[in-house]
Length: 224
Image (cartoon, rainbow, N blue to C red):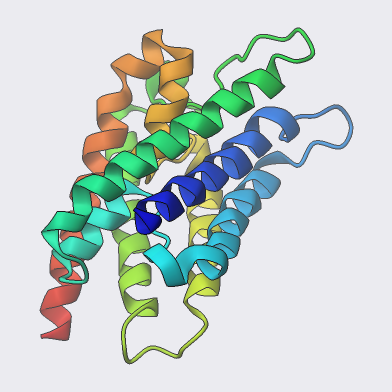
């Protein structure tokens, strides 16, 4: 239960910090933080929670990470479902808090940092571009996670490597899909946007998971 609560709080922080920066601060008049600021915000959420709660639950904060770690023989099968449920619920709770804040000045939520492709991609990128982006970015994210947390890796630096990796991933892929690589983060925002966000949600659930599974299998192969 303590591990699951840690995953709930950790994913809550990731969505509130990352999506919150995108919704509230990215284009704020005159002092907006822009793409660079949002990318850094996502990385900082992971970095801070990795050191705050990583020793309790591992700070996965992401169903794709949990599944990728399982594919890499890092966690047991019984861990997957409780972690994924906790992550999704934490993300939804954060989106609910963000919704209350974002509508506090009378505005509507707009796209609410939801993930999308085609006309709902920030840069108008196609479905094929979204599929490739989400797969490759999640694959590389898991390779970095698996490597940085390996027994042979330098101790104490995993949180920094993983947080910076997520920052870099967002710098690359926000224009394409608004960056998912995390089904929980995508689900939480899509639930509040509805309509197109829900119809395109399958991409941001299925593809990150496939990328994570591929990375777990690949890392296990090169380590064997």
